[in-house]
Image (tube, rainbow, N blue to C red):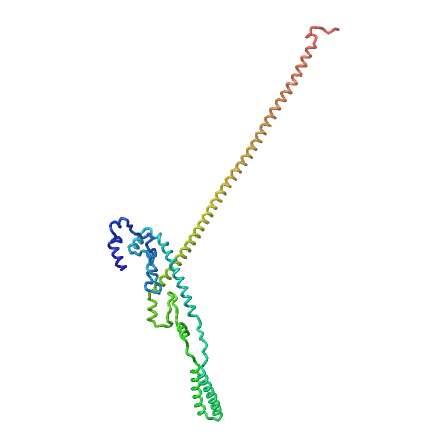
Length: 347
């Protein structure tokens, strides 16, 4: 019926049975709606694996539609939704496996229990009397066997030993008690084995046909798919983490190399700047010394010029001084001359 319904939905649409009024408020379902099974979209739905088995999960409450799955696979948002759906499916499957492993542990504990037989009940009075008679006969026969052996009558001794063995068998049958049903059931379970994949009880050393039938059964195959998916999902997750770690390490290494290059570039730039500043300081110092030398040279030239000019002034002043003294002397001489002052010296 589900297959036929899906075929009709594919041919005529999911709204084929709706009236015109119902179609007005009808909204077509898309793969990203909450009503659609994401497990079915990305991998498999566990509800479909155990139909009509002891592990049957019942029908899935969400929509399984091949057309929606095809639409999902062609959607440009496919890669963005796959991790989300796979994570939800892995969480659901892990819960299934945890419950199954709990049942497996309980089954193993039951199989590992030691079967302790119950103590035998006391013998009845009749059986006790029979047991006493048998023990007395066995004792007498053993004494006779010993006596015949000492006399060298081997054949007669062997015949009596066979009678002793027969009486011992009767004694064992008289004392042995039948096992109860519980002990027999536990002893039977000791011959059972437990499947590690699906947790089913198996008969140890069973026929190959029965073992093959179990391996190809829905429950075993279904739990095998669930366990394989969990292992694959965990391996992919670990691989992604490892790739992410390697990418971070590579990025960190690239950053370190870039920083080293930047540090070397800055160091070379600073070295060039330092050399440039050192050269400038050296040039300024050289210019300063040159300026000082020029100042000294100009000072020397100036001092020499002043010295020479000062000597000439001194000579001129000296000459002027001598000439002036001479002029003053002549003036005084002229002023004292009588002829010049119009009087005669008295005789």
